[in-house]
Image (cartoon, rainbow, N blue to C red):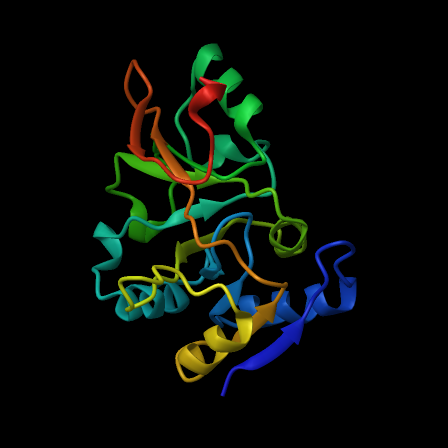
Length: 206
């Protein structure tokens, strides 16, 4: 049975945030709000938790396309090779925001991702997600929770999410209704930006 916690985005309660962080640090899986759809996440440093997410998604961990959700761009160099000024300016313009940027991975990636040439970086414009990452002290590895229903691609109601995911995760945050449109994915790992998926984020920032 997953724990269900209400956190208000206007002013996330620090005690509630710490409670969620404790679950993450103990290897738990959480479902939490972002500025797009609700995400399934865990602590990037916990291998067992990473393996659980991969198993739920039916993928091999080494080949997964999970995003690294960061608080800001300050610890980018931990996971990403040095980027040029143009790329950095795009990131500064777009983040925090509803984008996932694919960037060239560095040699310091956590073990399961060591062989990856690229990583997906997210800095969502959502106070709950950013408070969690700040309190945790490192990124959350995240993937969106898709719905099996073709019409409703993403579930937006936290109570319905709890019903469906109750036995798979350790905690579900109710941060209000989520969006039903995923992030825009932009590949910045080559010379020119490439739109991999058009989602919520506008392309006019480029």
